[in-house]
Length: 340
Image 1 (spheres, one colour):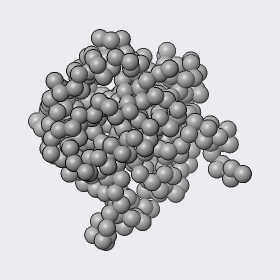
Image 2 (cartoon, rainbow, N blue to C red):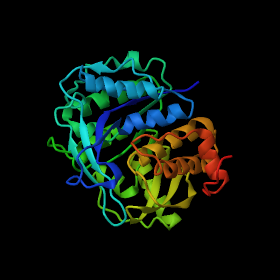
Image 3 (tube, rainbow, N blue to C red):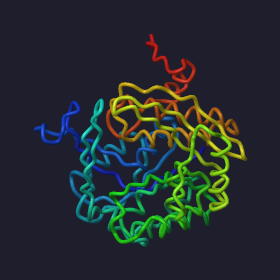
Image 4 (spheres, rainbow, N blue to C red):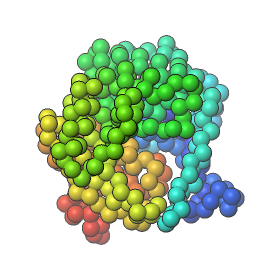
């Protein structure tokens, strides 16, 4: 039985209802989510044992976040209660030709003030079979980056496979470090990475690239270069997203393993209810496939892409679909027939 442990921040999300703009609304819909928790929640929905590790203040709003974690069946026993505030982000959901907007209010959040000695990672990871982190956590603060590195080093020491979603957020890297100063060492331990090629090269401090994702030979060359830079990364995956407008995306997926490139069929996604968390849905689907589909990499990338596509129809950060619903989507070629 696999147990996946994830580490990062859970935030309170505030969204105007019905695609209203910030200056139109008289109220906000509140919910909770965050990249690494979203992955754990997806895997829990898929029937897997998961645990989410974070830091939260000891107040009623943080209690609401923990209740969300409980509701999705994700373990929470190693969450530490310290600091003064939970991070918040405000999301204006775009529609048609108006793009979405995000405003962060997460400075001085509990997780950003965490120290690397605050969590007993050997104890936390003693029964884990997988560890997952994302590039959001080391972007929050230098101490959060140090805490993330310690977790990764102990997971590696214990022989636990490690995955990461690069999740570059330019608005978060504000504490004086560039990603290329922090991310290469953190990524050097990862066995699976989720990221597009240009973001990976940027975080590794390499020259800007502009890959043509329609050309398999070119994609393979870039993935080979990434694996030379990150020798433990035996699997690389990414979504292919072509954006027509805020309400219409075309989404596919790529997986590179053993010098072979696997593609998932591109799906037309329109209308889009909520795209936030769709990358986390892909990551959750990817890990589920890696851990449950043996060496069937085509099935794995098809499952991850389908999970991502379905998330666009669900409000909030968290993908709520089951394995059966993802498989039905694949088998019906995304036709969304009524389940009678």
